[in-house]
Image (tube, rainbow, N blue to C red; front, side, top):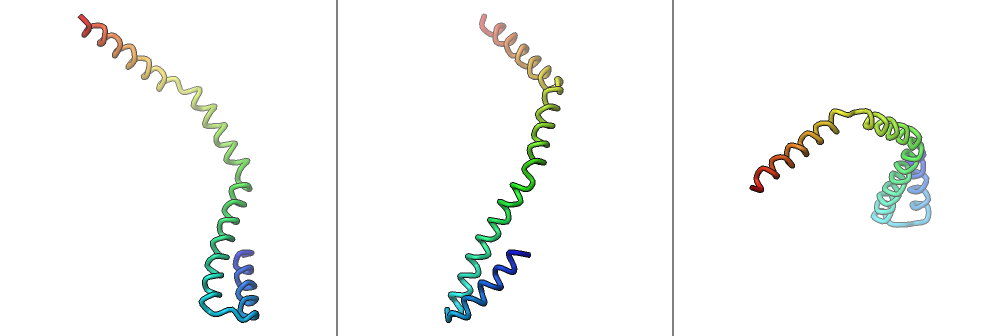
Length: 88
């Protein structure tokens, strides 16, 4: 909502100073992009604790999952066994 109020005020200020209509449109587009990026960055900072919490939970749960590790070990040992047999 703040972004919209900024654009309305910005447009009125530009029209009051006598800027051409194309200049007002271009300034509105640039202002919208800047305010949208600022809003997204603000949202990321607002959500940062939750993002960190999710990352820690995934990291902790990943350490408990031994099936993937066992599968990698099995495939590695099997490939080493086959490499040894092909050598001779």
